[in-house]
Length: 330
Image (tube, rainbow, N blue to C red; front, top):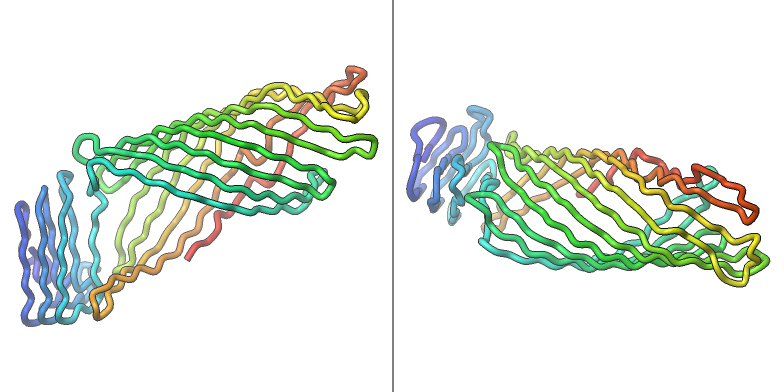
């Protein structure tokens, strides 16, 4: 335990700190645990950070080992100036844990070139389970189901139903957290359009194989927790032949050969968070995040159209903007 800057350290075992007077320094109370241990801190007096060694935290707790977790209990009866900072990044968490999410979304895109204005809406259900591997790694599986509906300003509509199965893994290496995913998805698509001379519809299947990796390197500066992250997604998409049916004359039906294509989409994000503890001991953490993604998949894959007389029209694609600013979040 450090009381003030660099006044000592606790390398192993449990730590108990009871502040009854006033302590100040680079981390007024600075606890540096190693190994599978517990830190219990009681503030009956005043703990203040004065910026020494660039630490402004009234209470600063770090797990410096790789055998964590550090189990932390803080009781604040007095005053903490500079906030409370703790790092549980190497904590593997529960041995086995599960999760489940329900999401809904609406999306619109303005017309661009020959691509019409369109709107989409949909929902998805996702769930998974993961478990500890070794001392700090995790591995798990996830499954998802979703539906989406599309409509453009030229009278075209579409509907798709998708299923996805994924394997995920994570492992901290020093101060960097690494994670990876491999995934398979199957999608059943239905499209319809009015041509003025009849109704046309088509149904076909699409398959996707996806792999991704991400690295994060959180650090603390003046009590602010900064989390930069970089990653990349690689996907390979294949689909069966698309052949229109319906009341439209055969000469106006569209037949499509969906080519197998691959996409690489790198991205980066940056998040800032500032934990604050109120007089009742509740920790409030406002945060903001922004990012950028070069979405290779937005260009679409080359689609070959074949007219009724055998004429081939090659290299047709959606071609949306590939540079995306990931939405700022606060």
